[in-house]
Image 1 (tube, each protein chain N blue to C red):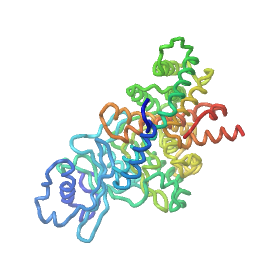
Image 2 (image 1 turned 30 degrees about the horizontal axis):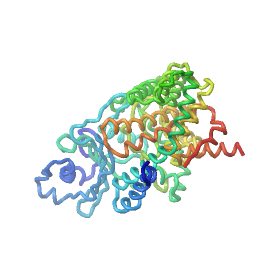
Image 3 (image 1 turned 90 degrees about the horizontal axis):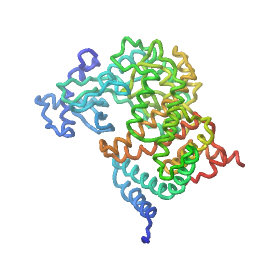
Image 4 (image 1 turned 90 degrees about the vertical axis):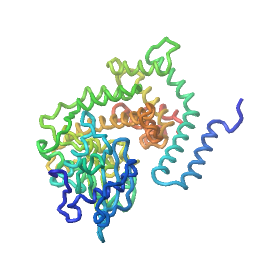
Amino acid sequence: MYDRPDPVEQLAAVAEFLRDQVMPRVDGQLAFHVRVAANMLDTVSRQTRLAPEAEAAELARLRNLLGSGDNKATLDDLNRELCERIALGRFDIDTPGLCDHLWRVTLDKLAVDQPRYDTLLRLLAAAKTKEA
Amino acid sequence: MAGGSPIRNDDALMSSAWLDVLHDAIAPNDGKPAARVADRRTARAFAITGLCRLSGGASQETWRFDLVEGDRVTPLILRRAPGNAPSVVGSGGSAGLAAEAALFGLAAAAGVPVPAVRAVLRPEHGLGEGFVMDRIDGETLGRKIVRETQFAAAREQLAYQCGQAMARIHRIPASSVPPLRVAPAAAELAHYRGVHRSHETSKPVFELAFQWLLANAPPAPAHPVLVHGDYRNGNLIVDAAGLRAVLDWELAHLGDGMEDLGWICVNSWRFGRPDLPVGGFGTREQLFAGYEAAGGVVDAARVHYWQVLGTLKWGIICEGMAHSYLSGAERNVEKAAIGRRASETEIDLLELLVPPPGTSLARKTGTS
């Protein structure tokens, strides 16, 4: 049992320090890199929070999609297998479940990497409208 | 351009003495002694002010500076590969700075807006390979071009002007250009597939895109044309009146002209204006109208093909930057960060290639 601040809180503290204390005191290329560094900490924070659930779901879907009975196969193993099947033409967009899986994985990646990316926001808004 | 000496018949710039002054201004950055200006009169006649490095990677640099001679101040840009890092010509590779300088001349003669080249560097200048060109006033930042009100009138005609300029580039006789790689769709695809494999990442969406691109590749053009190769929002100089210059010709090659029309439509350069497919500032109709007005023939299906290939290509370039960080080649925080932007191209590729996600799928996504 570790004390607070927890990892996400520590990342937020460093990001805040970089943005509020460092950035105003530097300029040019260095200021740009400080901003990039702060944004990167935010990405780590989102991954820390969101990855466990997303990766567990990805693993379950991949096992199902590939019909894999190998319980020791890692996410990396299964993704390599999936890539190979697509590259060999054994899986394509008509393969049941493939497109759903790719959308799911990609939306989960964007939620960590670039949650404000315009295509993501637009697709989420469209889905919401359709639902309403 | 013959002999590589200063190009404009301009009294002050005819003499390359100012290149020695420029050498001495830059030498400290190269860790070299500043010892070119032996002649005190030269040193007095010219001054370099406001020297500032703008950007560049390990092999290429861009510098801005003003050349001052008496009352006259000439705003200039230096593009160079310093030291003995000659630019490489090969598939997917750069055309080389010497070729880029030559292309500026051909483009200007064809009516394409480009900065005038003032000098092509020679070995005796001690500055590496490259050239000096005029610095043109205007905006290059894509985000500002698509948003700021001062460019509202420019945006109305920018896509049309881009189409015109592209058609003029594509009509430059291929026989007149310096040696460039020939890269039809199949060659580009094979090249980027190899690059992606070398990164050893597994991205099922990229594999799906490769399959689609292989199945739909257009035949190599019977008469390959000069393709700019990086014609996008971010490589344009724009002012209130519209297009002032087309920059960054280092990826120029011979191939399918539709490549340039597709590349400028890639979502990554729309800067949050996906509703305006051409660089976030215009419509395909405007782009195509400008292209046709300047004598080009549009094949919309091939433009779409190159947009898909361009999206994948940018994704592979993003993962390449992460690879270059992870391999230790470039320990730079920006390179590391860009690796996590490859997923932007994955969502764009899915949108281009497969049916949209179901509502139940999107509902489960928690964005924060």
